[in-house]
Length: 425
Image (tube, rainbow, N blue to C red; front, side, top):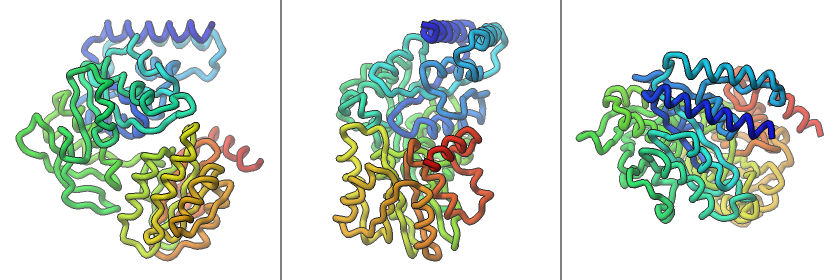
């Protein structure tokens, strides 16, 4: 009862805020994968001209979203009436104060049917971005049609929408009712796209950004590894064009985008190895993409460390087996799995293809094994989910320098306490 009261009050304040400050633009981002990277990329490019507000983490639940929009910290004492009264006071002050931002970029998350649609009761986005429709929280959504309806709902209650054509199947267009929709992606069939003319794992992509509003492609560099991480940058460019940034501003902003910790971030490993740190989370779409990028690297040895993909529900076996079948014995010296589902389903599929496979119950064991088998100049992909996998701890064992541990995900004292308790079981 108290939580519902707080929720309604916060949503009321958000509506009042936008009534009081109609000049503020709201950009929202949702999708099965890539929300945070896309949100940060958008903010990076828009900052070339605008004052931008975004919460650095995935502050995207129904209770926290209003606070992130208003720029108010989430209270530590969630059951404290006094703490929430302070929040309400801060919200009223924010509404009454002069505008301190030009654009708010907000991530919207969902793990239940109808949660995205609920945001429409108090948010009216100027631009809604949908990053992907792929398996997620399948214990609740059950089928992909439900996922598609959920994620695409944001496009229908936004004034304008941008859809990632590469990661949203065109068959789901039937769920779109908004006529003001454009597409973005890495393929040239998308209205907003990027022409990659040169690429290195160290420097990223050199090429040109294409927008239908401009006669000519705009030369720029995007410093991310692989094709999939390009898509958040392209979304950022598309949003920027729609909000009126010049070609010079967009090119400059795109060149400043960098991979976030745990999201296809390249780190230096022991013995002159290259680590692809993709440990923030894992899903079938993201795992396939990261494997594809590992295969592209010209190195003497490739190792894939693959953790169980959480939140797949009844589809877990099929999805893990599918990733196992993508493991190529001609491209991988080792396939190393962490977690029960990866061992039960992914590992046998990889073995059936002829891969050399080793399975471990936790990431510390996996990291020690990787350290024992790496060759000079190898490339190691670490791809895993959060709960019970924590492959960032395996990365630590292979890093060239302990100083780079600060570049890994989930390194706060709170997270380390949780992980220490997990590994001590």
